[in-house]
Length: 76
Image 1 (cartoon, helix red, strand yellow):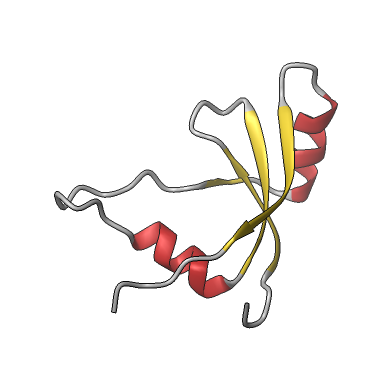
Image 2: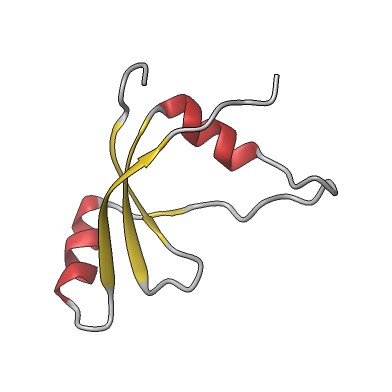
């Protein structure tokens, strides 16, 4: 990977899981602007702050998944 952007915290689609990504800024930009093969937009990530992530971590019904390497490349 090029230069890591750092830890990025995001909620899952069902909002019950917090994901901690190791990623670059370029990968996040590509994910947020991506489209499906039929032209529809993909679901965007719901980012949360470090403080919110710690609050969710202390609650019983939330899961935290750490150390996800998120790396993708553009089509061109």
